[in-house]
Amino acid sequence: MSLAPEPPRQRMLTRHITYRIPVIGRMAREVVEGDVDNAYAAIIAVVSLVAIAVLTFGFPALVISALIAAAVMFLFLLRITLG
Image 1 (cartoon, rainbow, N blue to C red):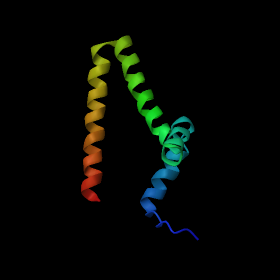
Image 2 (image 1 turned 90 degrees about the vertical axis):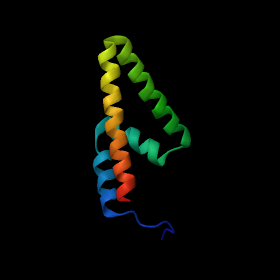
Image 3 (image 1 turned 30 degrees about the vertical axis):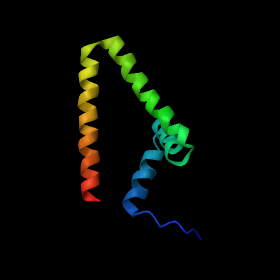
Image 4 (image 1 turned 180 degrees about the horizontal axis):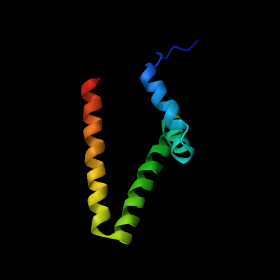
């Protein structure tokens, strides 16, 4: 028996679905359950992908990545608000 509290059903369902995606699931599991350095490596990978996209496609890639970041921030704030 574990001393950690049981996560809510919604969180377990979301993790179960996310972990089943072939490439994204493996990376998500490493970031959530792995070492702290895995989170830093994920951040560096995302920043590198955005930089490569901007170098390849120019200003539209920068605008699209900013719009995606704004949407993610709204979802993050909504998640904080709902508890």
